[in-house]
Amino acid sequence: MPALARVRTMPWIMVFELAVTLRKHWRRLEPRERAELAELIRKSQGRPGRLDASERMRVRRLVAKLEPGQIARSVVPIGRRARSARRGR
Image (tube, rainbow, N blue to C red; front, side, top):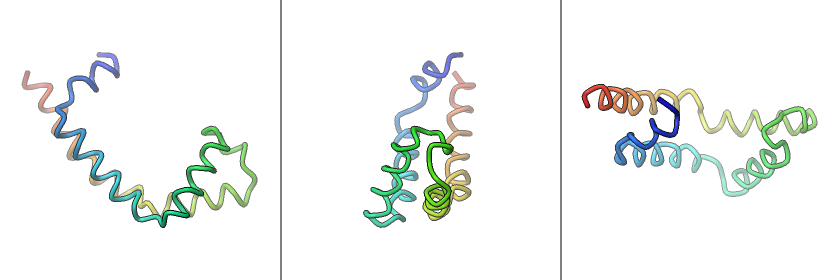
């Protein structure tokens, strides 16, 4: 099944849960830090090699503050429910 089709079959409540979880982690950064991270990501265009060493270190520190491991632990149950919901159809 193509990725877009999988997204379309995901129940909207799960999309909402995912958005709430991600927003909660994003808000752990101060507004200035969020703006800085967004600017660094735009500058790099998703390629770390486009940033100098100090900028890459700053991105690492900001991302660590988002607690990506905790995000993953929060999102896994949502994904499991989505998969089991599709199987039940």
